[in-house]
Image (cartoon, rainbow, N blue to C red; front, side, top):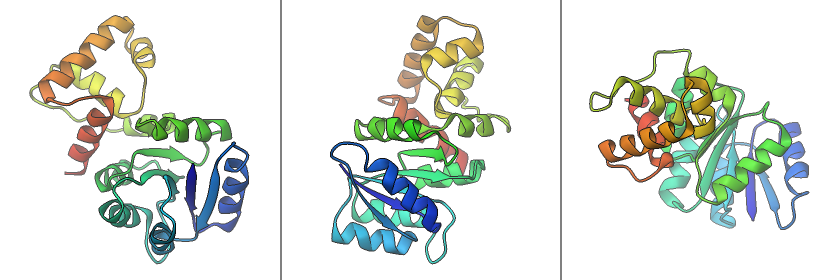
Amino acid sequence: MNLLVVDDDGLIRDSLKLLLEMEDGWTVRTAPDGEAAFRACAEAQPDIILMDVRMPVCDGVEATRRIKEAYPLVKIVMLTTFTDDGYIASAIGAGAEGYLLKSTPADGIVERIRAVEKGAMVFDKGVGLSAKKTAPLSFGELTERENEVLSLVAAGLSNNEIAAKLFLSQGTIRNTVSAILDKLELRDRTQLAVYYWKAAQD
């Protein structure tokens, strides 16, 4: 798998490069800002990009938007210190497949990269906690319970974690998620998360 690490901090770039290249078959390039990342995609299109949010020249959200327009098959995961809901919504709206914090353990970053490779959307648990500091969005076609479950899906929690948090059975959560998908005419959890965060951006 070909990866691109984009960050204006050279130490972080080099550390992530060393970490990720320990995985068999992974090759890693780096770029110091969004403009350089776009050029790197033109030179050798990566499979997955780890993208910082705040950078000089071209920030991560704008770079994500430009890269997704030109190279829609490239998957992008934001990797940042910022948990602000505005950044999350902007990144997902620009097309990012995930939003992780730099405090994520090394094995967690690798695990989430593999999940994105398989088509999943990933969020750091810290992002989920931040998202819950404000009132969750409410969609009129959903019940109060369904809105609550949707907000937790969008925050990156699994069915098991949602069940534990709401003191409900996994079967109940699974059925609730299915009902939400039917009502919103969406296909899977990834589309639910995108739907939620794009609404948050509006």
